Length: 450
Image (cartoon, rainbow, N blue to C red):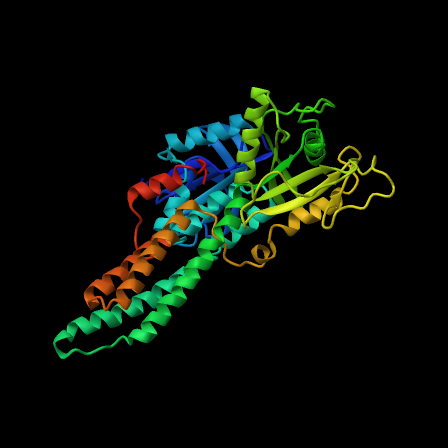
């Protein structure tokens, strides 16, 4: 995956817009562009951060009028000489410019190759490089805030501070090894334990943020559950503003889980419309109810819908929840309920058919997700690779703490702490190049022009 530093070219924008951008990066980027670009002066003579009007030429034929923006190494995204050609968005024009650039000596970039060059040049650490892809893929305000914080080094600096503390500890321990015959103790064991416990709490805080970060990134899973015919599918259609789920007066119409996404107030929610929960001899309906229970188990939020028109309203759900799950009780059909209706405490009264009371439901959904810290730039982990590295680092730290309690020899204790340093460092790979297979896995998911 680690590329040669030849000159690469790729479209940096999707096809079909009014304007397109073609990106060029490498040692020969400026000279290569000069072979097809005609402006007032050659780009090889231009200063960095300057924009030049000219024409793309195929021999004597004008392909397009363009603007060429020049970036000089090392002050560019990739750390190399780079040019961004802004042209008209015609797919024919873009393909012609790419053809001319490759014929002039460039080659088409691999997915993520611009960003991997930025990483190799020290412009980004590995976690920031991953955040580039997350920024491009962000489908909500919250997901964008999450990726932006990480791309700006949100928790990279925090991880580096933890690594520095651990390195200081290992330095003291290894200094003791140099004076082992004199039985000198440079690292006070009480202070050592307190520092390691403090680092453990920081690692735990980052690990615990993963449930929020992953939910924001992938969409907060919300299961809509309840008895048959309480209006679950009607609510889903109302939330989506379209007739996505089939609605019928016949109980048991929904027999499979329907999943749809909706962006509500800057947060992406994944709504799971489930089969009604009841006792039944219908084998297909029982299969649907089993899938309902599975959807409830994997949801962050469960909307328990009840019928406000029933003589007796019970808020007690027919399922159990984990302590980390949020339950919202929603009483539907209040438009048909008697005027004397008194809703159970904390229940949200709505009419899914009429749209009444949905503002309260939206507020409750937002209240179940703590996005304030996210918007203030607090570090939140959303990447599976980072979570696994933090988990492994915590396990290594636990071993070191156990060894410290058992008077483990200094060299073995130092090795356990070095394992913590290694796993924390694998997240950012600052000061080291990550293994090629790690880079291959990360950057293979990128789009061509990034």
